[in-house]
Length: 145
Image (tube, rainbow, N blue to C red; front, side, top):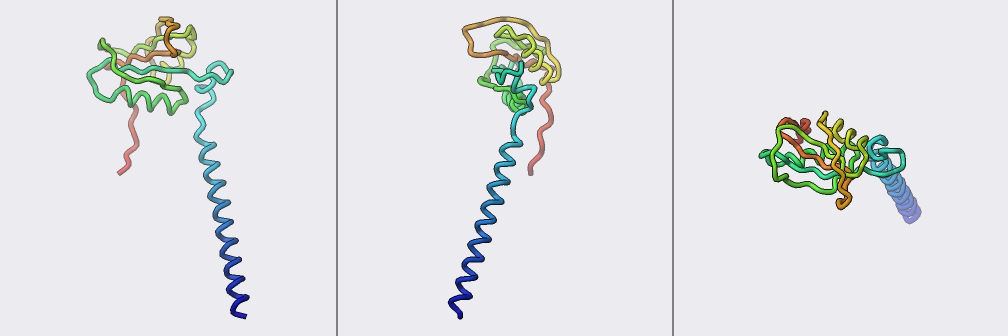
């Protein structure tokens, strides 16, 4: 009799572990599905294309390009390159590199408004270049103590 009760306890424990694994897997799949970028930013013209962006810091403020990169990626843009510009600017400038001014306007809107200019450059694997100026203020980051 003792052997039967041990067997039942073992089977019950195995069932509980299996149920916990199924619940954990479903929760992980739901979280992964909820991290999709917004549809308007990830598909600029509805064709499934992603806007490829270069972010350059045109100020003396350290880390500004990194903050802008995180901000744009959160909005579904594909930031491929970050760096520092050789010239310093007072206001942010968004350059259309691929002949899609609507994409550059979307990036400018995501940054809170910026001047947009068309400077096509087919030698770059980019759609938009962002030159961050002194007037751009990054959004507040959450505080995690």
